[in-house]
Image 1 (tube, one colour):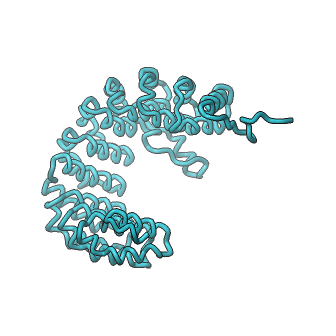
Image 2 (image 1 turned 90 degrees about the vertical axis):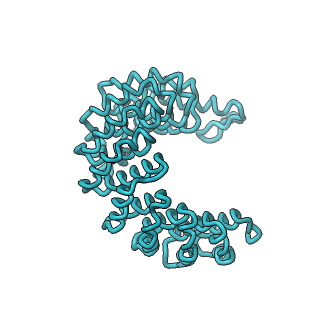
Image 3 (image 1 turned 45 degrees about the horizontal axis):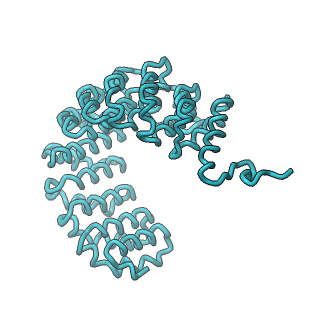
Length: 379
């Protein structure tokens, strides 16, 4: 039995331009015929970054599938298509009033990816901020590792709406006050999403800095604390300068026992500009923090602070050469040196030595550094 020239094994190998159309037809037939969730997920994954409008209806229907992994895959496929999905926005928006919570979350995920193209549906999306429910089945399956944990926005409507609204432009940002009310929600996931949303809402979100500060003062969940700190940093960026009160609150968190909180505080200081100047000594100490996560945040913050941070270029270079550090921390230090102007470039020879480092990650960072300063001849 001789196979046609375009069939190899079990996969189509059609010459362009027939390949994509043929593959789309195969995967669409799987979606239409199969009842097996795993088969549907595999078919949907093939459309991520390779969306085909002729399959749009079939993919859209999967947003309301009874299996959470199928819904997630469908949302990912449509979200990756960008404006190509705009003609289906109205059809997707109808799922916002679906009786199935998972379908509502999946629809919001896709509409958020359409950015201002989904602005007409901002009010309908904001309505989900009032839904005091969550998909407990997703958490139940993730706990014993039966299934991977879904992102919060795909199982909690409040999180889905809070995440999507800033992406919709002015129409979405107009609901900043409603999002701010979620800072007191009983679920830490929702409080995280609310803080992140306000931080992404520009001036409209920054108007609620006091609410974030108040929430930060009483918050005990490390994830929510870190989210609030990041929100304060973005609010300062939106205003052009952070408030003195916000910087003071962030500095206090440098002594937190949670590395995620410390790294968030360090990152926030990195965007504080001149307001961070009185706290440079504390920021410098973070280079020797016991957590690699904090070290990485510290070198990034020093690089972002311009001349004030460039003073510590030698210390950052020392971290890059420290073989006892994780490769990720050393690579981050090298990348930070590349952003430190002449002070960073002064360590060209020292970084060049790292081209022979045992760590491939460090080697690649050294190569990037040399190319960025015009020292590519080392490679």
